[in-house]
Image (cartoon, rainbow, N blue to C red; front, side, top):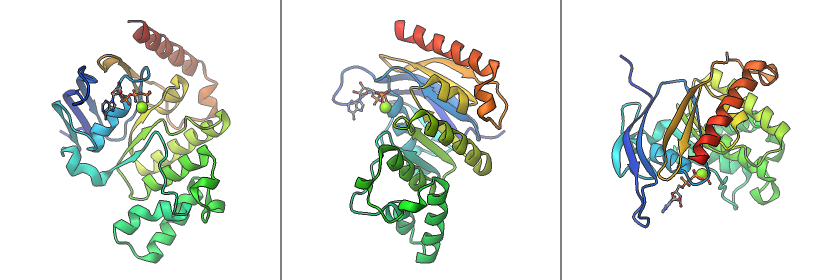
Length: 254
Ligand SMILES: Nc1ncnc2c1ncn2[C@@H]1O[C@H](COP(=O)(O)OP(=O)(O)OP(=O)(O)O)[C@@H](O)[C@H]1O
Ligand SMILES: [Mg+2]
């Protein structure tokens, strides 16, 4: 029997400062290679859930296992792309991407080669020497994605990574992300407010209900990979988006 890549068992989260539980009774099993999107109203605990998986915060109840390990012990195989791309303002784009590699003690030649490849991948080679303040929001986000990929993670946690992008760029980044995933066999946990984006990317969409955050729906997206522009134009895609939107609206009303 293979162990799940990410396992939540009765997970609850309560912050010391707050009286109400933010998350409760989360039971989820995510297999290696799944692309799981998490949607739900603002404040329902999506970012909190990702932070628990990353070991940046600990469960108040229940437990999480990442490839069989505690989140704290699994940090090396997990990368996080945060909701606000937090780049170091005093480091150039290239140096921001290089940071984790420097910490790992890689040679200068290795770092140069890896960062070059990653910047090419996210289409930012031409601004490698620029500082973050000279970049648009979308470009900053692409730098933070390149930075997350530098350590060759098995599991990618992405918190609304494309929210700041125009629709065309977002669609292109979505296709690019799926292409990369095909190649690298990541397991992805992806937070978004866009139902269409969630359905396009995911093999599974989890809808969280608020107050306290809990799993309201677990929807399998039966669309074959690779997904392309033609996927978005298909009738099945439309149907799944409509069905998911309806479930999300019901969650808001409940
Ligand atoms: N460090 C913290 N201390 C206390 N409360 C917190 C902390 N972090 C989050 N919360 C609370 O937990 C709840 C869930 O927050 P979270 O950021 O996970 O929501 P979200 O679903 O990601 O929302 P959004 O869609 O707006 O990003 C909110 O009520 C928030 O105020
Ligand atoms: Mg959030």
